[in-house]
Length: 147
Image (cartoon, rainbow, N blue to C red):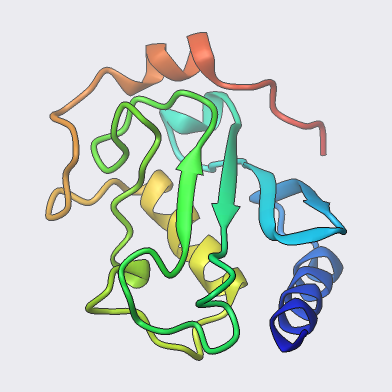
């Protein structure tokens, strides 16, 4: 129950603050452990589209958000051609890695780190080689929401 309350509170905070780079958040009220939303990058080449992501919070680790591998998983559902995101949509995001995870880290902070990573790929954590991202984004990115 504490896990559900925490996630519900974080969800309400994210929706209330109106993050312009994370929109269309969908959560099954019966299962708060899975969220979906659109990442809307600012920087080229990714500013040509939007990208659906799925965030999974494992039930056994949500209450205290232990720093264990897989404590939080983010998957890109929309294909993205990005050096830090593999072909399966798995992202290399240091803030959610086992060695860096802190129980006090909130979901909105993770989303901000993810948006920053998409806007500014990190060569230190590559999952893919240099890519022609702009053309791929134009082809596979979802239509950007109108402001």
